[in-house]
Amino acid sequence: MQSRSPASRTGRPRSATADAAILAATREALVELGWSKLTLGDVATRAGVAKTTLYRRWAGKNELVVDAVAELFDELELPDRGSLAADIEGVVLQFATILALPEARSGLMAVVAEATRDEALRERIRASVVDRQKRLVVEGRTRAQARGELPPEPDPASADRTVDLIFDMVAGAVVHRTLVSAEPADEEWVRSFTRVLLHGLGT
Image (cartoon, rainbow, N blue to C red; front, side, top):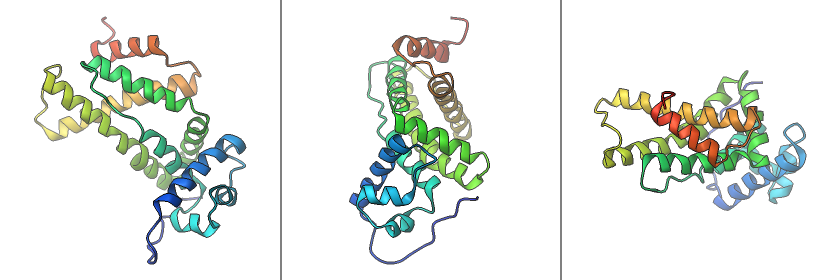
């Protein structure tokens, strides 16, 4: 079934408090019930809102779970740890910690599986998770360029391609390590990964 785009509606503005309660209830239901048994009715009950409130905000379960998982990744930060390598290690460890959460693990794997046959859902994942988190790559690269650790990229198209490549390498490696291989992305692995990312296999 293809995802439906939410219809434009007029009326009372959305409540940030209700949104937060619904997304938290969705993550709670994912842990307790799993993807297959999660329903919007159960989420509404847990959040203390009417089921119609959910349908005014989300077209269905797929979109709701994407947003619930995306909110977890919005907690990622890139504190200045003094060097590009240290910055990368810090954010990758944060990313791995989030992926270790049962709600992140089950939710992300479920919506990615659904997205293989739903182009609209794939676009929502890209917009809500991937594109939003590319900010970390941009921030890290800008900081490293200011330190003289990376050369400037004056061509915007080339710079955008670099951001895409770095994000794909980091996200792909960590997701595969933690969710596919079911291996820990601990400090030792993160240090090794960062060394290869920055210096290549020759090191």
